[in-house]
Length: 291
Length: 290
Image 1 (cartoon, rainbow over the protein chains, first blue to last red):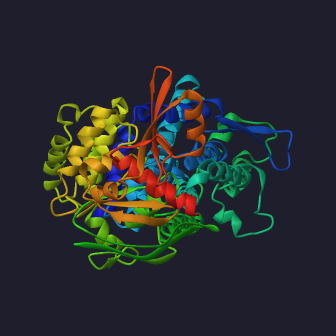
Image 2 (image 1 turned 180 degrees about the horizontal axis):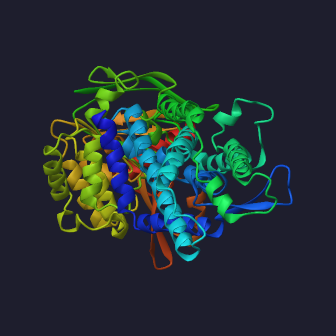
């Protein structure tokens, strides 16, 4: 274990010693800030009065579900394969593979240590994305007072439930594929990105598989749940009112969704990601990529 | 302390890079020479536990490179033919990293890094980023990392390739000083590197051992097979195409050609062979036989 952490620690030192790392960190924060600042509200129709559009504010507890799932998750998923796929494969590109592979550290320790570093980078990127999101929501609130102050608790809950598990899953899968096919790094990254785009924005499997609502790594089903919860809350407050009322809209989106049904499935996603890393360690061969 | 290689074979697809190779090596320096594609790098990689053999066995002090790889790596120093570094690290930090991977305990690790930096004469530049190092300096970092764990078995694959003459001499001297109580295997296609430092010479070609002898014995065996001949330029060109020519020196309209052959042409006079001549004779005569 200590050896694994030592390998991970040294890899992180290497990452931190890279001049572009700070730039990348700033870039990730700024990117998510810009993304959230650009898309921070949604117009949702009321169920039986479709012509009545109400505003869902991205910084409200319900609006944050939209913000995290529809905006942040999609782009965060595109970033992770590029952080994770090269965890071990980078050695081939840098031609340090033979030096490292002839040291006394066991192969599985080396791979596990590299995954620790990959995980740390992924979680750091998630934190930076969180910081960017929060900063953008604060900025929107400051410039447009109609937008509520961001609900940090709700945002953190969504982060823990959605962004972190998706990050671990994508990191594990990318790391596994990158480790087993070290000379196909770009193919691996593009492949994982395409699958993620399909799952997050193109294919909705919830119609075919009911359980997928809870297991979707991109959390898409939450959009429908949050939208329905919002409209129902709005109708309950508005009664027969047929016009969009910003005050009612704001009150209707104050309640946070009950996220408990998603907890276990998303812990399952974390487990799958970690199993991917374990498979990478088990399937790793010192000579892979040399032959 | 012994490296025992028995009936070793390594196949890539349908091509055998090494076939039925057997060697026993004890402490000292072993020079391994051969033309490109002779199987030297494959042999080095198998000894360094990087490649599994297809057939046969390689044992270091009784430990098989397959099943006992972990223990062998703990006592191994390996300098690959081509290697990279982490350009963002300084030499000191890079060596500390590899020392950690070699499981050297702290604080001995840092002391050892300082020792090897001094050994390869890099203390003054140890804290500079590796991205600013010259090829020769990087090669010295390479040998430094191979020495970190004070290995019993040191494997250096083409270590002098790309070095300027003074760096090569410095490197050879450094290697020669390391042979006490360890086996150093120096693979190269630069024959003079071996001549200067190795007590034993193995010539490889097409995955097999052609000669396993000392440099002096190889040179002695070539006595009477190296000739000089003064000819005109056209004849020199013809000889170059048909005979094994190890040197040509232009002298006005005439050219003095150095020939490696057991059947001298008329007018040729015998000269003392060098190790390079002996190597050409060994490799070339087998080429003719095959």
